[in-house]
Image 1 (cartoon, rainbow, N blue to C red):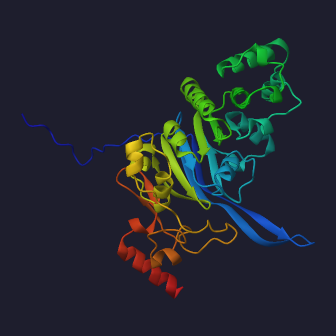
Image 2 (cartoon, rainbow, N blue to C red; image 1 turned 90 degrees about the vertical axis):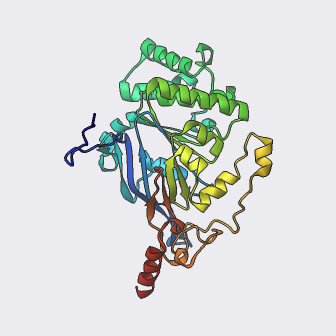
Length: 354
């Protein structure tokens, strides 16, 4: 028996989930002012052409050194800071084009959990009042119905009615972060931006909060933008990872691909510094030490921003910003090591002529 071969008209289309959150070309600079007249003497390019996609119910881990622009990116996504350029689409709606009233309504679907829960909670408000605030503002709930909803939210995050009338200072760090999570869940958001949500907690409490976030994601189907510098935590919670350096995404892709086969030298250096819970493997691995300091975002180097610290730097890296290159295993990397030598030579010649 001979199997029929597909005709040229038959097209096999791979299903790619439509992103719930789609960020395109997001950029933001901050002016540096000096002198009595506060004149602008420079601009700090905190975020430089960032593209991100998050599918429904998935987690994208955004990692990088301190000062790489991760937290600014999170705030730009929610328009807590106005971007200079770029588009942020939530379920197809361009958030950057909304007026104040429409943005306020859209924020019911976008919530943020900050690094320091003590700083993000009103120190003079009870836990009941803090968690109930979005219910009052957006849903106009009051009285017993509001209190019942707050109690339900607290129970979802592992707290009880005993915490309703306490102040933030009367709770532990882990309990305060649970309160922040409960408040973020109040409006059943589609996307949570988590800005270093466990970095201020001790190790055992970190594990509890990470498990809680994973359970809540499965229960509610939310998407997470998980911002962190702890790569072990990011690997545990993320399906996809984006690596950020000096305001730019230098590598992104499925989490296991990034961890098992990192292509960008910066990603390789970050992963080499992450401890492995196996003493034998830990002793056998080679640590990659990056020389030099991170350049100032107010005066980034030309070409590839990483070339001042890269152990594999080439002449093309100093003058030409590398293009994004797709890899066979579904990741992408912005590095001249993965661009053909012919393309690199042509880029150098074109730059020299310009």
